[in-house]
Image (cartoon, rainbow, N blue to C red):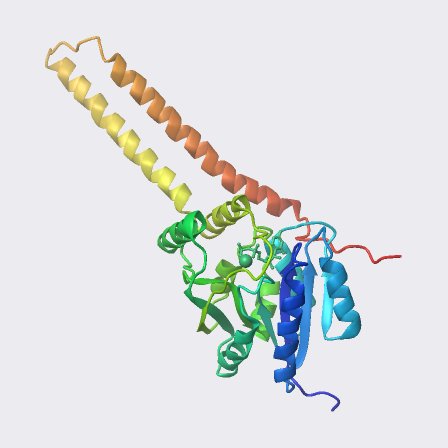
Amino acid sequence: MTDSKETVAIVIPVFNEEHVLPELLARLGGLLAGQPGLAWRVVFVDDGSRDRTAELVRAQAAADPRFELVELSRNFGFQSALSAGLARAAGADAVVTMDADLQDPPELIPKLIAAWRSGAEVVRAVRASRSETGLRRMGFDLFHSLYGRLTDIPVESNTGTFGLLGGPALEAFAQLPERNRFFPGLRAWIGFPTADVAYDRQERAAGRPKQTLRRLVRYAVDGFFSFSYLPLRFLTYSGILVSLLGFILGLYFIVKRLLGIETASTGFTTLVSLVTFLGGIQLIGIGVLGEYLGRVYDEVKQRPIYIVKPPRR
Ligand code: UDP
Ligand code: MG
């Protein structure tokens, strides 16, 4: 036997992170040095950075073969970059998924591994506290309370990407073919025994958040539509309700007519509000259908989730 050590891979998507990389690499170095009993792999996925991110990781990989760089051909977004990293880590005994910005402290990783050792196939790092404030914070809270109520497979509200997947969970994840990927949802969907480890979420160590608010909103919408039929069901229910009301209204006028009570020929306000109200409901309905249709279109095109940059010549 040459090497019977367990392999633990750490997958980190990076996008324009030159300012945090030095500290991240130093802290990862400390972690690896403290756990010599494991065969480590640190897989950085460069998601089309326009700064020195790839260069810094490449230098680190040249100095220490435990570090690897996967370069995507352009910016595909966090979820795609994460999938690229998980694919590269295939075969590892366990994979840790984390952000680069040190909001997820690498020092927690031994605890994630300990939870995995005691039998969990999926380990989620749960935030005992959150550093986001203001609009972002409100957005996160609103998303999680709605998501928990509306979808069939709820996601623990204080978890994000940070966590660990055991080998079987990693294989299960690789079988999921969808293009619209919402990692916490998929991780819950797999259904493997799960453990939680609490931690304090830190401030971003340097630089600005790379996920724009628009991206986060898109991500939240993706989360809903990939895990819930409720918007469609809601349309059906409101359709049934409105037609029932129409039926009763019709009956009312017929009976009135039969009894010989004259119906006033006004009612312009009622008509206008009914027409606009129903028109609005129909437009919303088309929009909701469109959300699903667009996602179906994405899947049907069968495009890969990411493209790796061609090797340099
Ligand atoms: N990231 C990425 N591609 C993107 C945007 C972000 O790979 O298009 C990475 C980023 O480098 C970081 C992680 O995703 O490692 C989380 O990003 P950020 O901290 O900006 O997001 P937030 O903390 O708001 O979730
Ligand atoms: Mg962050």
